[in-house]
Length: 350
Image (cartoon, rainbow, N blue to C red; front, side):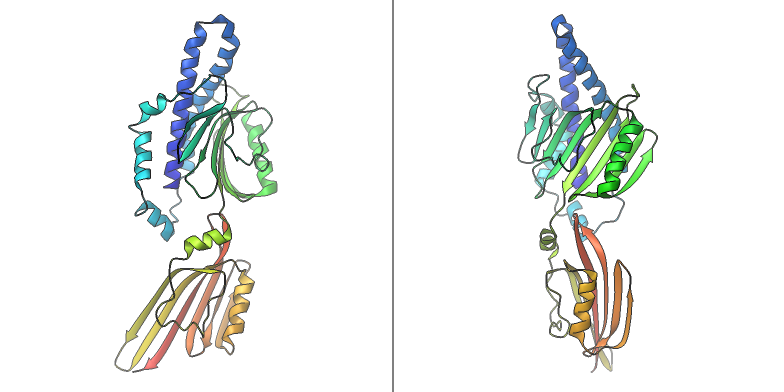
């Protein structure tokens, strides 16, 4: 849902800017004294067309890779709200309403639309945009921007043009990210796309060559402020321990969230086997989680331990239970956490 909302807003912004640019050109034809302003607006109109043309490419590059957790599934299903439905209607059937918005002066920057969910700006950055962390290349002109007001953390999109060749602009952002970010890149002829995390934000940056001038390049930047680790844990903590779980023998490390838990019992004529499965997130490091369980479990038989820099697998027999604890690093909404599963199995005679 988050990606769908972003691209719906992108389309709306481009329609508003394109409408304003067209209206400005008509008025300029009637006034020779404003010829210099007409030239500036014509350039903006060219950029609008270029941005509209690049949107399908940007949407394709930004599509979900198919890796979705339980919370993503819920976002696509039960959490779809009336507000989501209204957003779709605004983008499709409500186009005329958006076109009728008063954009104010043709050259003055300002807010062109605002409600509880979004604030759309023309020719200026949204309030709170972290320009000190994500600076712009010299020669950049801000065409438009928006701030998503519906999220608990800051979310921005900025649309701009740069008076420089595509390769030069792409190199500027690649060098900036190489020094400051964890990122990956995708490329196509005339398009470079970067995504990753930087200075506490998840970002997407698309750079597109202008089709009419080798000295002009379009840039789109989308930023979403990462959640704090504690805020991410609060969202993930949706399960309690199963009934009968032996917490005194296999305690859960502090600063944790239980994202899933189950209990199962299998019986045959001679035995009863009880199993517990927990999925846990914590702000502790891998080494701290491993050290915690090595200490609290005490005497361990049949122990097996495999570790590397990003995960471990720790299993054996302790306190009458067979156990297996597997942990790895994960990033959840920009917050770096440790995710681990804890499986217990107890067998008794009937």
